[in-house]
Length: 279
Image 1 (cartoon, rainbow, N blue to C red):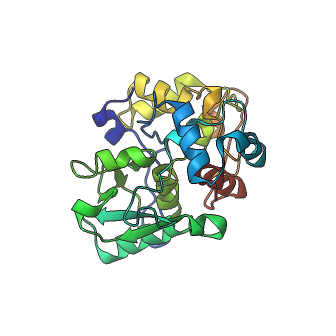
Image 2: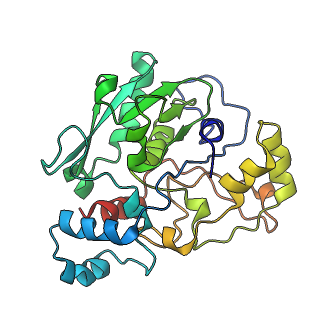
C-alpha cells in the first residue's frame, strides 16, 4: 500500500496546454491511491442494488445490464453513495470542491475539466460544487509542484479536512478530467487486468529515477496490474482510448507498443462511470 507521502509524490500527467508557454520536460506518469481495498464487496453490492432501486433477487438482471465480469464489483467500493455529498438522498450526489490555492484562471481550467464528466446519463447522478468552504468539501485541490494526483473515490472525504486530496501541477483541462475520473472512482487503464504491457523495465526505471521515483514506486504505479476484481463495472475490457490511460513511449516497452495522449473522456470511460453509479 502506498504511504500518504508516496501518494503525494507519485502521480499523474505531465502536460501543458496552449495557455501555458512551456511543455514540462518529464515523462508523463501517474499513480493513484486506492483506499477502498478490503471493503466488503457483498455489502457494497447489496447497497448498490438498493440505491439503484433494484430488489436483491433481481440483481442478476443488473449484472447483465452493466456487463459485469464475475469480479467486476470492486469499483463499487469507490463510488460515492447517495447518502453522501452536499445534497444527500436527493437523487444527485453533489461533491463539494475546495481550492486550497490558485488563481481564477487555474480554477476555471479545473472546473471545465471536471465538468466534462457531467454529460449524458451521469449528469443526472453526479454534480460538482466549486469554491465551497473547506468544512463542506469532499475534494480539496492544491496547485503546485506535488505532481498531479488524486485519491480514488469516496475515501477522499476522510482526508479532505487534513490534506489535499487532489494535486494539480499541470493546469490543463484533460489532466483535470483525468484526476476527477479518479475522484469519482476510476482507476488507471494501463493497470487493467485485461492488458499485459511488456515493459522495458530498465528504461522505465532509469527515466523515472531522474524524476525522483524509486523502483518500488515504479513497480506499484506502473508495472503492477490490478487483479481481475478491478475490471471496471460497465466496461470491463481494456480501453486504449481511455482518458485514464497515460501515454506510453515505445522505448518503455520491449515490443515497441506505445500509446498517445488521450485528451477526451472515451465512451467506455463513461460506460464505466455509469456502471458504477447505476445511472
